[in-house]
Length: 206
Ligand code: CDP
Image 1: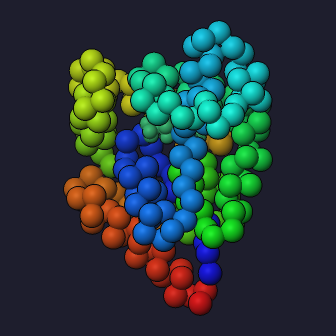
Image 2 (image 1 turned 90 degrees about the vertical axis):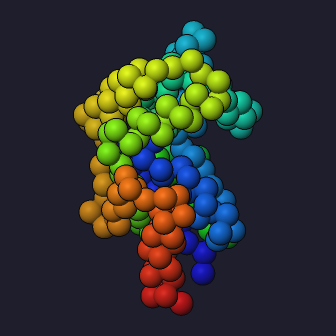
């Protein structure tokens, strides 16, 4: 039986890496929902209004992954993500994706709480502030972005604060989510831990 897997957590916690690995192992489709907000944020930096940008989003807007990863786009994403009208414009697409035949993995901030409250598996992935800043710093430097560790740490802290404080769909672990703290885990261990949570559900539903 194919499952819907919801993965949430703060920035650079490892949720994207886990989501991609699970999707690959299970042969499921994967949606990084952060890219939707990043694409809307990017359009607002180019002068479009947030709602107009959300309504006009196409698959092509999600293609330029490197530009979407830029720190100024991340900040713009978290600002538009606090707007209820932007979030509701993106709900249908995400829910349709989650219902795909053959299984789906979605990662974001509100997947287990708002987008897919009935997901078969819910994971909430965390890591310490210092570890998350270090990971994102390495990732951005590796992609050629000229950033300091302090700037990256400040960017994550500001987004975390905004994402957790907003009234619509704040960053929050669903009550029934399995929590995975990846601070001291290798990628392999984190993926294995996540896979075990999926297999526990598969064993019950088969
Ligand atoms: O990769 P990282 O964890 O840094 O961020 P992301 O997942 O690409 O998300 C960028 C921003 O989009 C976040 O800071 C949130 O404000 C917003 N977001 C959201 O509100 N809801 C989601 N389901 C996904 C992202």
